[in-house]
Length: 385
Image (cartoon, rainbow, N blue to C red; front, top):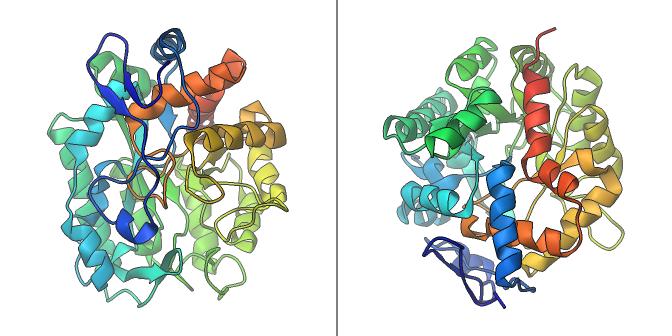
């Protein structure tokens, strides 16, 4: 049986799958804790997962591989300076993508990182941006992300067809993304700049209370939904073909987005509120259904909220499929910037796939969840007309 230590078929990569998750204050370290799997696979089950991944591209809808976003940030709160001081580790994570069989991931900048601090079990904005600070930080982060392409570590993904080109090149596809769009300020022309930079996913708002675009789910409302600038920005993002992510949006903000939407919108890293499990980062079933009805998806998020093992995450994926249907669910790991993650290395992707197959998930459904739904929505968002 494959459980505590695991060797991928045909390779020498060891998957360490034991060890309980550490408490959150200790998570600010280079190597996040690896949660117990809560299940085991035999060699045949693991081999089946590896073959499945070779035939079906897996895509992570939301991630921060190697934490590129911390490089160059200034004027940070002291706890985030500690987080930053650990550094970045993109090459290690990109190697894990290759070994684990991931086709592509969102490489997400974090627009508001300099104005955040820890608050409870999460983050909150604690100051306003200085004049020009948000735009300057966005530009610095994009330079850092583009350097990964220049170093030939990743393949840039600008359109759905690029996913297969990345696989053919033997490199992970990098889908540039930005979490929070306050850098726009009131200059809508910057959205075209974002598109020209190769950004294809924008998480509309992040943690900034009373930000430029609208209210967030983790702070008291200021705009009672979207701001006027936010409504115009959303329309322009959709016009250009940027995938708009509502993961951090207050429900009033998100429902306004759905009313304005002419193309699919998504939630790249969240879960659905239930009577048994409530959290400020989760969304209502009504909102999740609205996202799916727009043609989009809600990506299952492996944060340690009501979960302690990877098996719990597999159960959550199944729960979301039951609630939203097979076309409405994707994967969004928040890799390298997650809260007490139960999935913290791409080396465990075959475990996720093999575990779902072992639980009896239909292969066609699984292919949609691990990447097919992302590809469909990616194409629909960029479709002309």
